[in-house]
Image (cartoon, rainbow, N blue to C red; front, side, top):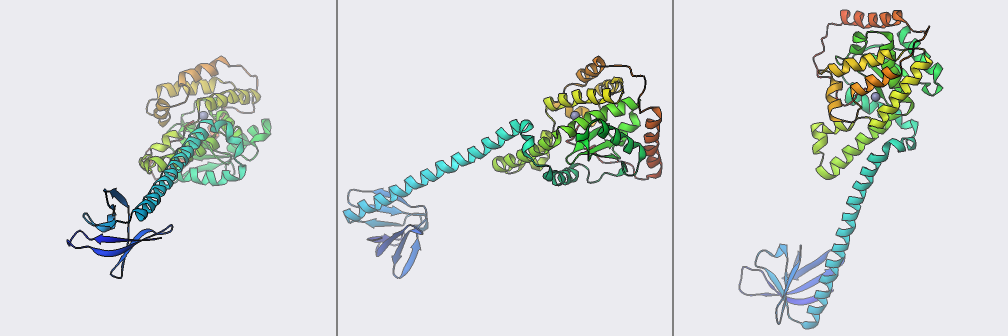
Length: 358
Ligand SMILES: [Zn+2]
């Protein structure tokens, strides 16, 4: 569409004859003295006789004057349609933006019950991500492939629950008292947990809790949640939270997950003929060990308190005549860690691992 008008460049008092062009693709432009100028951010002003078109590319005082009343009506109609189309686009973009964020938040809230939607084939990839976050610098002391005691523990759990088939145990050198599960059925035992364990029941109690996390795929929900937090952070805050590492604080199992894992641990220990006195003692120690990384995370979040867990396991204490596990197993696994400490010349200087708790 073309309209005839006068172009005032805002520098000279005289005006030039110009043609105002409009097409859907490139919007408004003017042609004067064989020059073409695309108009950006077009505004207009109606006087009693003229329609004045103002645009960013015309400078502060430049404008185009349209005098023909029919052309004025036509241009006003075009401008009003453009405005309407823009406002519809903005409202759609607004809805899409908040729609996506609401879906991500809803997914985050209901993730624990949606974990079955994630196929097991994503787990090796999630494990890789998790290792790169937490265990990039960790030194592996033993695995169930290399150590017979770890193999015995693994086999015992699989024997009582075939759903645990495929689990792998690993001892890593870490200065905090903890054990964690990673996607892909990996259970990581921190060396300090073994060093500080007072009984085999204590170590097996903690592992029974971790095995329940594996069984219910709790860490899949946790890592998917972490990805969602990172996504929302990138959309809303441009990655400000992820940049500070704060998003890691969301990598917590929910209170319901922890309670489910504790209940599962009680059942496993019962099947293994091991008393819950060990894990009860473990939580008693945790409640008084203020320096552990576990404690600092617990403060922020969703875990049941150590005292509550100590009393839960105390309440389920039973005595068993015989178990396949005894003092000698703890002695053996402690010896593996001690031997490694003796050989290893590298002291642990880095901060405790963040974001993953028992
Ligand atoms: Zn847990």
